[in-house]
Amino acid sequence: GAGPPLGRFRGARWIGGDATLVQTGDIVDRGDFARDLYALFAELRRQAPVSGGRVVNLVGNHELLNLIGDLRYVSKGDVEIFGGKDLRRAAWKPDGEVGRQIVEEFEPFAVVEGTLLVHAGLLPEHAALGPEALRAALREALAEAAAGGQERSRLLKSHGPFWVRQFATGAEGTVCPQLDETLRLVGATRMVVGHTQVDEGRVKVRCGGKMLMADTIISKNGYPECWRDGSMRKEGCAASRSYVEVRNGSAFAVML
Image (cartoon, rainbow, N blue to C red; front, top):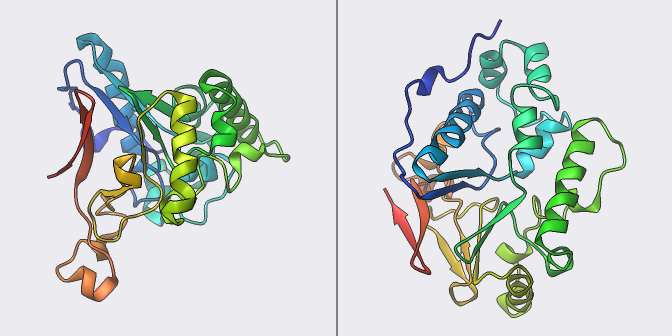
């Protein structure tokens, strides 16, 4: 058997007080320790409200891939920590240790203090549904996909909020007006995304500060080549432990 999760983080305690912590998805497929990380975040989600805080986990495209059984990015060590292929498969079912969390407790996006946080991006055509209707539609689509539904909603496909890259890679003259419309529709002033890595390892600003790309290759276990000395010259990437802090209406990139 796999034994209980949280071994690497046992005893972890929420120290964020009344702050809100948003993790932007893709906990899995970033090395070997996804099981413990899901257990850690479940514990933090439980603890934070006691002191008035909140922990929000967003769904990423790799959560979606694992829910539907696409395991091409899963490491051998990840499978071993779950206790083997069969136990890992069971853990990712809609009623399993990890799958239940994602389907029932993770959010497809969040708006916190005027900031829209979403794994990949949110197009105006989807934002036009309205936040609550869109959230409900995405949750339903995830649950159906996790249960083995063959006809997947367009919301889960390449232009949906777990996959779209045009905000990160498209010409600003094209994508910034789209971003403005999305922000208007959801009542936010900026959008923070993960999904598309910033090879320089620093939070990247687009659209005059209305978009922040926050994937700075934070996983050392998943991308060790980007953490080595001279990695930018040798590998074309340089990682960092970074996050975005939103305070009093302003956003700051913090590098640890």
